[in-house]
Amino acid sequence: MTRLKIEISVPESHVEAVVDALHTAGAGRVGTYARCSSGWRVTGSWQPLPGARPYDGEVGVVQYGEERRVESFCDTEQARAVLEAVRAAHPYEEPVIHFLPLYEP
Image (cartoon, rainbow, N blue to C red; front, side, top):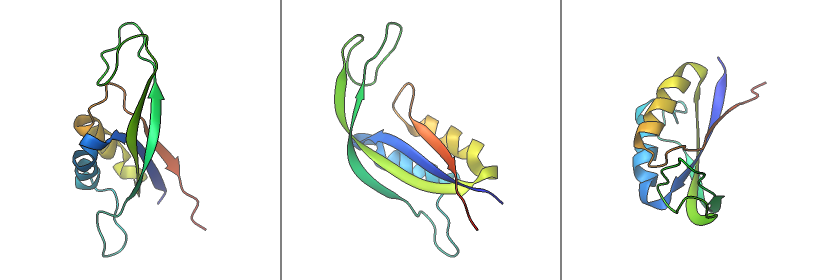
């Protein structure tokens, strides 16, 4: 069974909702522990292009904002459900959600 590391950039105002969605979908289980994740503050940058409907900022202007990088993990079979749950809870039009395969010898 392949495990995946999940990385998500989330505005501070939505961290709890996204973390709840992530774990409700089955991510973050280690043995007899649930809701395992980590996070730290980062500064994100983005420039909404014409046609965008930004959560924060305005089209054509480079923006900078405080975000939290949330990390957890899931089994490959859970990835689709985790992705859909996080997208539903995330306020961004195009949230940054990475799934990275983990090497487990």
